[in-house]
Length: 305
Image 1 (tube, helix red, strand yellow):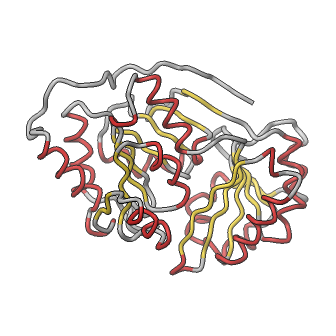
Image 2 (spheres, helix red, strand yellow):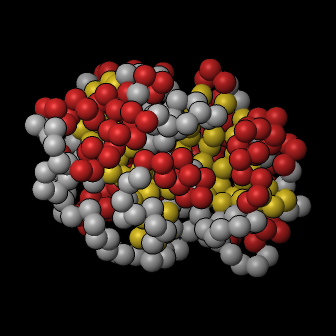
């Protein structure tokens, strides 16, 4: 199994497209009997259009929202975890001093993303706002987003790196700490951090561990490729962790200390180079019989709250 992050790993910059070389490498690995899994902080509707040109199998698994939702490319839900309404509501006043908070709900269409002010967010992540505008609904005050009782899968606040580190430190020390999981994605060159607040125990790594167990795969059978701190748990789970050299600098340094593999930069098709090297080393120049059954999906949990 090869598990690949999107932003900063398959995708070199937010307004670019994934290269044909990366797509070809994914297809060749799939043809060689290796299951491809996409693991991203994006929600599925925001991730699938980027991956569809690869023409992967409909059964390809997507771990989305940093591990809270797992579905196939075709949309079949495998797993989902929800942030309880009372926790989500309590986060609204707690996060307000740190920036604009966005909640993600697991349904398609307007209201999948809820926030208080689009204008306040545009200055920080304008491209994200424009790409997601059809799904955004403004609610003031944000606490009213939960009046109907629907629980979100994810909360997010973004801002300058130091501000978000302070927000993370505050949350870790707060009474909410036992009710949430925190994952940050840092872009120091843009002075931007996205701080995701998830249900307890949720991460790309925990979702990957469940999927590998369901597939009957040991950690040694899994390669994970990422670039940022929200990839850490899946990198730690994988028997072959790979970090692209353009990743978060302190994560790259951690990877070097742990003697993890360092891939070429995402804008040099680092994912493709690693997969091509791996296929060549195992003599997989041509398609062989699948070593795992990647055509069947077992739904092992439909909804956990």
